[in-house]
Length: 222
Length: 264
Ligand SMILES: Nc1ncnc2c1ncn2[C@@H]1O[C@H](COP(=O)(O)OP(=O)(O)O)[C@@H](O)[C@H]1O
Ligand SMILES: [Mg+2]
Image (tube, rainbow over all chains, first blue to last red; front, top):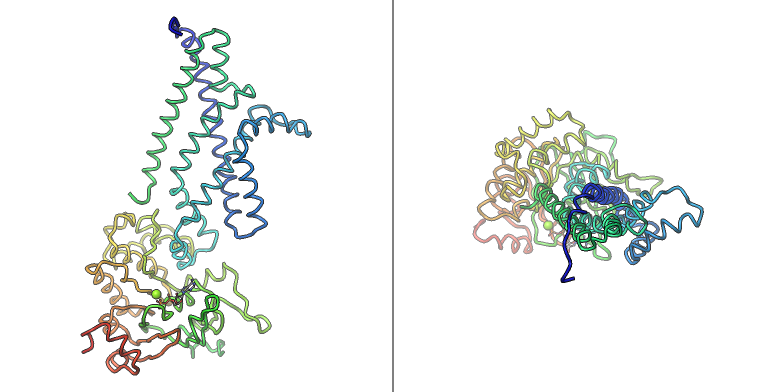
C-alpha cells in the first residue's frame, strides 16, 4: 500500500460510466421510494383500520420484510420467482420490485406512526365543519401526516439510495457494480472504490440538503 | 315525538339524553331546548358532563338513549322497527355541517392559513366556488378583527387570534347553531376579552349559541338563559339574574361561590 501510485486517469476515462451509474442508483431509489410510499400508505391504512383481518396480515408482512436481509430478498425475487414460474421481470424491474416491497414495509411503519400521532382534535375540527371521512383523510390527515413524516421519508430515501448498491449482486450497472468493473478492467482498485464512495457521499449529502429545505418549507411549527 | 310539526319545535330539542362511558353514566337524562336566536349558557363544575353534552349534539359522541332534534329532525340515528340505528358517516357529516363548534384548544388546521381554515368547509362541504368562499372567509375574518392576518398560519397567531379564526371558521358555514366549549379556558388572561367580545357581537347579531363557560360576567351579560349541570343532570335553569342571583340549591350556591365577589 505504501508504494501505491495513485492514478486517476482511468477514473476520468470512465467518468461518464460513473455518472450514469450514479443516475441509475438515484433512479432506482426514487422509483422504489415513490412506489413504496404509495404501497406503504395503503398498508398503513390497513394497519390503523381497526380491522384485525386487515391489520394482522400487514403486520406479519412488515415484520417478515424488516427482519430479512435485503440481499436475500433481492435474490429471492430475482432467482426465486422464475423457479415458481414467474418470468416477467428483467433484473431492473426485479430490483425495483424488491426495493419497493422493502421500502413499503418501512414506509408503512413511518406512515402508521405519523397517522396515529395526529391529535384527535384536528380530526374533530374536520368533523365539526361537516367534512366526510374521505375529505378528512384528503384535507386533514394526509397533509398533516406528510409534514410529520417528511424527515423520516428523507432518511428512508437516503437509506434506499445506499441500498441500491446491493443491485450490483444481480449485475445492475449502478455505482458499486461499475466501480467493481472498472477495477477489474484496470486494477485501479483504490481509485475506483474511492470514486464510488465519494459519489455516494456527495449524492447522499446533496439529497439530505435538498430534503431539509423541503422539510423547512413544509414545517408546521417553526 | 312530534317531529312532523316542525314549527312547534325549537331549533334544538334534546329529550332524555343518556350517555355512558363503559359503566359510568355521564349524562343521566338531559332535557334541553334552545330556541332560534337564544344564547344558552351551560355552567357547572368540572366533570358534570357539559363537554359530553355538546359533543353529543355535534355527534362527536354517540348518545345511548333519548333523542336530539335539530329543526325537528332526529340527528345521529333513525329508528328502524323500533330499534335505534346510527346513520351512515356521510349522513352524519351532513348533519354536522349545520352545527358549528368551537373547541377549547382551537384545533385550527396547522398546515393551512387562517383564510384556508375558514374556506375549507365552504369549498369542500358547501361546494362554494373558490372566489365566493374567499370573499366569505375575508368577511368573517374581518368580523373577528383579523382581516389583515388572513395569510398567517396558526403558529404565527396568538391563542386569542387562533380562537377568533376558529370562531370565523365555524360561523362562516352559516350554521343553525354554534356550540362553544370553554373557548377561553386555554387562553392567557389578557387574551380572553378579545374572544368574549367577538362572541358577544355574534350573540347580538342573533346567532343561536350554546355556550359552556366559566366566564360568569360574560354569562350574566350575554346569555338569555343559564343551565346549571350537576352530576350529569340539569339541576337549575332560568334567566341569568334568577339562576345566578338567587341560587335555588346549596350545590349551585357553592358552585357560584367559587367565583367570589361577582354576585355579591
Ligand atoms: N372519552 C371518555 N371516556 C371515559 N370517560 C369520559 C370520556 N369523556 C368524558 N368522560 C368522563 O365523563 C365525565 C364528564 O366529562 P365532561 O363532559 O368532559 O365534563 P365537563 O365538560 O363538565 O368538565 C367526567 O367524569 C369524565 O371523566
Ligand atoms: Mg369540559
